[in-house]
Length: 154
Image 1 (spheres, rainbow, N blue to C red):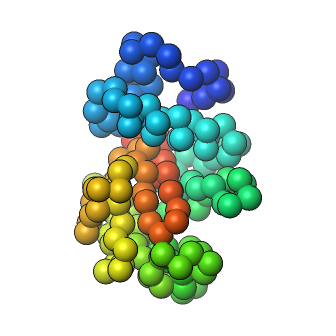
Image 2 (spheres, one colour):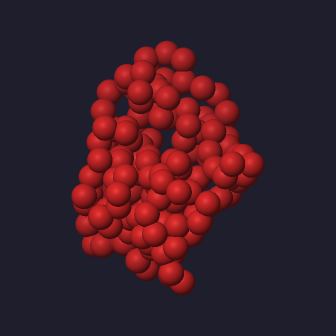
């Protein structure tokens, strides 16, 4: 994405459709999609340069944008161990809430029997296991993570 496409919100249906094509596999324009695109665009605008590899991007409570590269298996939770991404203050996350790993088919998210579940894009879409697409939002605990994978963008 260019800085211009990030800082200028899509206003017409044609512009929104064009924005949808930057997120692989997205459905047509809906109010939820517009909100999702705005959220991802704001994260990208505030994140600065990001590596062109699969990664998670999220905003901390202090509004700082952080990211984690997904190289090997990555476990996210309150206390995921040394190879994980820890959010000990988030009481709605399980100790090991979900995992991500890159496969030949893409990045696979697996819910790790968390008490509150892991959802993709909307709170009602909880999953056990799913291949992620560029721009998917992962809802877990009190956090919203954006999955970005520039290798999927044609």
